[in-house]
Length: 437
Image (cartoon, rainbow, N blue to C red; front, side, top):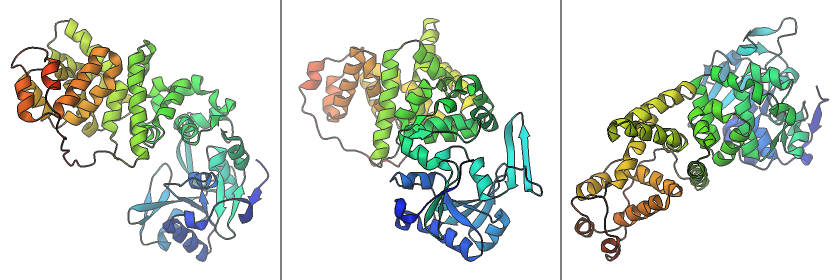
């Protein structure tokens, strides 16, 4: 345990004007009722780095039941970790009671540990104990609303200065308590541009397979935080570098290990495009991104089945079902997303069928836009694939009659000159409902 370091208001950059009004209401209400209450965790970390937190969490010595008595707009959640959620319209302030180590006599609450994993942790304690129960040192600093100081019990300020992630306690023990902490290390390092301390990264090789014991639903939520929050490409590269990709996305890892550079280009460009959309405030959907990540294995399996004389439609359906089934054992992708993924994949071979009826049928397919965007990502596969993407891009801009006249009723290709001779028209975009999160 480090000696407590108190950073007074004049020595840090946190200002109340950058803190959610809802969080401030919770903090002040708890103080007025005689409880200790602090802004804690990622919000304090991000504010000290000059960022804008999306979520604001509060730590207090009030129990969940005591918090609920103070706020009519409060609901209690969780069995593993008992928490209070104070709801202000669309915003939720998460209020957690100080966690204890369970080693003190008379500790309130209960803790269950199975094979080193904490399956329930509702032992209340002091703020000092609470700091030790947190994962990374940069996440264990407390903003004190009573005097606007920052309390650092574990050396978090030093880690912010060093731009490094260090775990509190023994890394192997902390990962066994909760294997998802390994993914949090990767995600936070990518988000913050920090390095992972050597001691914190060392157990990945030995303990990575513990991720197989984590809830697939929880891993889905963690994958969204990694890939759909604006730092997906960095997260992916760090996940692969740390040897953890194979535990989250085994099919992706296998495909990349085969040395397919075109596939790597597709995955990285897809992640980069997603990061760009997030930065621009545009909607993103997990379905498209998961379709990108799993494409290599689906494509290879479908091709193998076709070579075994399976009908193409059946081959693509079987390949998609097999790859999605395997993936959902690790990361529980909801059916509403896997259905879209399967459609994006199944439409890819139809782009090669340049016949009048098939072209117009594909252009009116509800998943055409997503499938076409996916086709453009595949331009690294070959010059022919790049030309195919350009053809479909041009075809969408042609008047209906011009396109119909240029297309053969039967056959496998179209004369480029027939299309290029027609003047393009400005494409009218249909208004689409947001599909992302």
